[in-house]
Image (cartoon, rainbow, N blue to C red; front, side, top):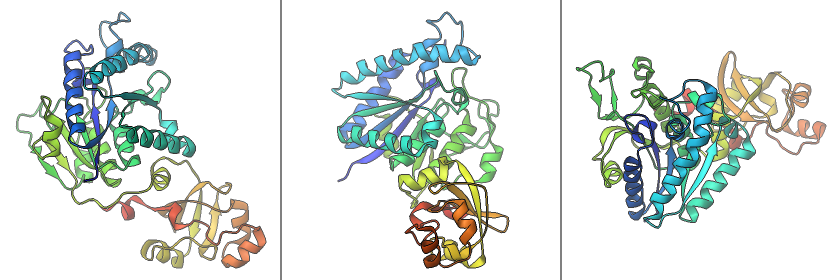
Length: 375
């Protein structure tokens, strides 16, 4: 049987003690559970928070710092402590870990995005456990990115994971905060993440050491679902906790069933990470071809172009005032403005570009409403 690929995300609250410091006992338990999962023929990628929490005590802070400079300094100290602890723990199981520190701009740069994919693929091929964390020491905006929740979803999609586990200090998703509402009802299973669930969920974090709350996890789960990855959000204890989760015995919420979306990394980059550099407005024939016939965008269907961009840019494709898709163009905006509405043959002759499509279907993704039908 082919190996299943699992991404395990461990938040700060699941790695630290009551004072906010790194809890080696908890870390060792997570490590043992991951090692046991690997023994059951799973590939595992670990998304681990905890660098700031691991480092702030050694810097003399009485509690987790609130300033950006304080967090970055704590992360600089704590990242080494965190990785060393993982190295020591995994070595007892003859497992080799590897560290990757990522920032948001890595995902927006297509070349770097592809490099991350290649690195992770090679590590898994070599039976290594990648340990990924935000590079908190240099990424100012990433310190409020949701305690690695969204990162875990994006990595899950990038590596075509079968399952994403988000381990936290609350046993699943509730209709309201169970810490303040004793009558809160847990969702044991959700086929989708509806807009109502997102709107009804507050953003506060459940712990003093974590930066992500349930809102962050719900948004991450929604992203993972759109990328074809099933999700678990909850807690677990002991060396068998990850196996229990995979065998539907987890203490938490299971999200997603029978998912079919599984986009290649190029389309994921276009859909979630690429900077938009312009707009192409198309006629009804092009709308029909793109939405209902699975076709590429041809020059004949273009009405007008907004923006100035080169070939290779990502643009929005618009019907009237509605964005129906995004895609990577084969022609510059200048060439398109001079040849819009013409046949592909005429455009190729005039521009000397040997591509009949303005946007090939392989480089086109539909809007969220059309493409990710999980609601």
